[in-house]
Amino acid sequence: MPVNDPIADMLTRIRNAVHAKHVNVLVPHSGIKEALARVLAAEGFVKEVDVAGEGVRKSIVITLKYMPSGDPVFRSLERTSKLGRRCYIGASDIRPNRQGVGTAILTTSKGVMKDVDAKRLGLGGEILCTAW
Image (cartoon, rainbow, N blue to C red; front, side, top):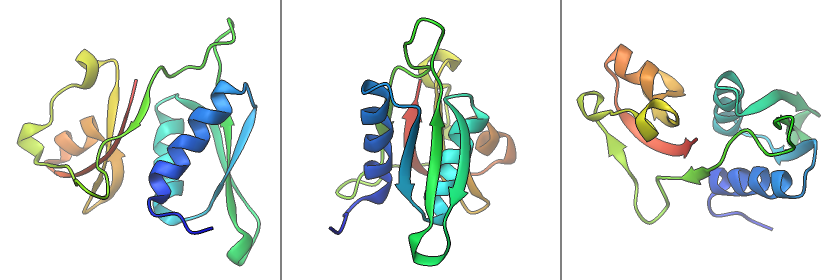
């Protein structure tokens, strides 16, 4: 079944797996989804990101992270830029997300990175998603 917005599909799979208290979630592989998952792992929202399979059957295995109480580490994982309305931001307009608690993930000319890194490098781009 074709998916119109693969990034939104990936974020929905992660949210659904967290609500069902799964340990891992499988996502079909693409370069941008892998980079997005690696940024989420670097920020501590997910535990680990691995790539499994070969060729067309390649998939991303995301190991989810929970607090000792059983609650997920993130409270919100939302797609910001959508198919019908793309959201772009310049480096000078990047502000702290949720007063520094959350992070926005951008795609820039230098790759996928969090908002703080993009501002430090003086890069703007499309806001893929926000997490807090």
